[in-house]
Image (cartoon, rainbow, N blue to C red; front, side, top):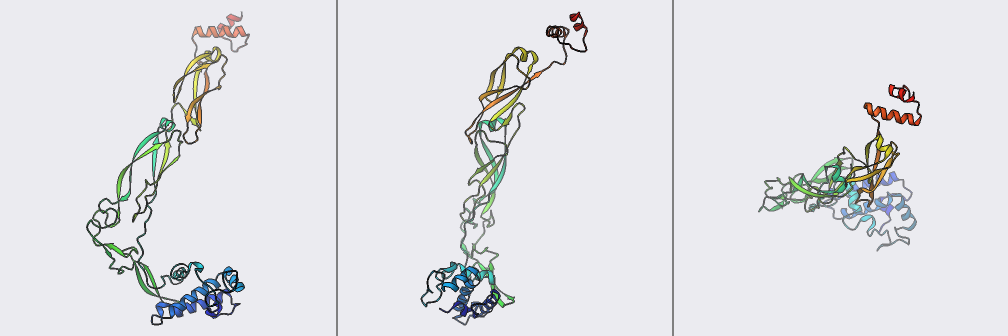
Length: 376
């Protein structure tokens, strides 16, 4: 095999610009579509592309200059030249050469081939799921109705009316591509694009499905059952694999993502796996102590209020919070005490409070008539 520089007709020290200019000139000269009568044109064209693939890459060119091949020994190959083998993905028809041709000329090397029907995964979809506070705490099972693109039941997803055949596209003659000639700076270049009618498949239904009109899918309503784990939090996202839109050509379904919204509660407030609430008690209950019932998500619980409880004190009811399936944590119920100070007192209550004040020797201003009598 000839030296790569010799193939492009440039000296070993040629600049990148000179290499590129030489490649364009030779690529145009030996392009198979412009030399249909020259049987050797395609082989020369491939050699030119192979040479450019190496010399246009700084690292590959340096290695070639040093070793004469991409290996770590002397020049390889059946003729002692550069051994392309599977270099750059080139293995006689796909990979490097085809990629270069595609990017340079905007088409495919050689005769266009129909594209195989490619299975395509369905789209992911999203939906909103609203939960009550208690549903988020204990978990629940919900049934949702989702409207999505699903496999057409009439044609079973092949786009053809039942009984109709799948035939070669008459627009591209089954090739999947439409070829055209366009004028470029290199002259007339043959390009190809996917067929508009068959989308590059090369085959179309003899008669399109009357339900989906050949789209293979229709929008259908379907019911989805979802199990919500205990302890799920507001703004969580639940993923249901395979519950999204149907794929095409046998492709898998997409996924369904549920955005969870948890309603607030008029009594409870959530903090991680703990639940908080506020309980109002009378001043005398705080002073003398008492036993009161505290509502929790697990039911009413008796709570002992010790004498001398202060406003703002917090009592912890262990195990009465949230049992989270996600974290495995068991939360508590935290009760904050708010002591209510009476705004209005009866005459009897005023007298009793006045006696207490006098007993403690408190100087309270302004002194009411009752306090004056007790102090005199």
